[in-house]
Image (tube, rainbow, N blue to C red; front, side):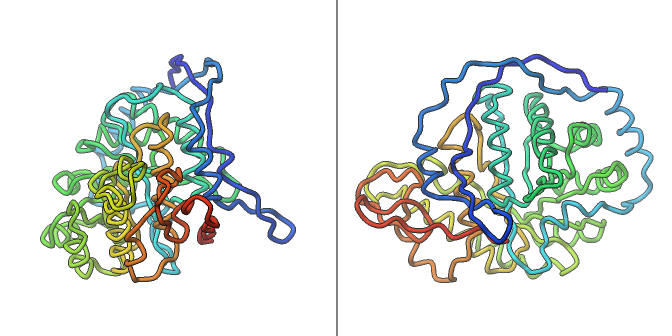
Length: 369
């Protein structure tokens, strides 16, 4: 059973950031960079608050899951929903967006959060990661599950949900499952003790590794999804790619805040500033990981506040850019324009946002099918 708690919601959304593009008898959704820019420039909605409910996981359900997990014998067999979403048969890169609001930013239960969930799915994110290290984070995971469930039978369908944030015990994993998670993102230090129990309750496990010895040990105890995390050291991650066998999903963590974050992307100064170089740097790091044949990239802390337009646009921009088919040459990223189109003299790389005022707008590449 689920206990409801009454909260306040406010209305806002990014619906105008998409346009219908005819394709045969049906119409498909395509991201419109210009529409996304206009939406991000608009002030927050002034719609009145409305009452609704946010779900809280039931303690009895969590206990039952813990008991089942503790009874597991060995690593068992993992489900395949998350791994199939992250490793495409075509070899195409997949992008995972993490929502991490540990500071209590924004309005709890805001409809902006539901809108963020909808738009991330439409932006072709393979999975969504939600930090559940706080009670609010756990409740927001449930909101994500409820919103993503609405897409069943549609295209794109629901994104698998992965819980992150201090998941070192079977109780935390059970709470994630009860809230709707399909998988958990865990540190190497806790992974061996969690693997079998998580598989027993239907959770897939992504193990974060930082060294070749951790890769070897994780594979030995049965891990099937590894995420290489080395901070801003993309070259170090690339060097470790060859240690992960083909039958294991190979992911790389891209720190969304390490290269300047939204502050760099929305900097309103001239294109020669260091902040603009940071924007190019995060894409350069991402494309290095893609070219090293990682199956997917997990953008850590891509968004920390669904009520902040710059935060949500930053996460959506990263998803769009990393999913785009760019050449291996990075020189064209020397100048990158903000999706908001601010800064009169910015130059714009293809698909990165509005160009200099008065010039023709760069077209946004259609998301990969």
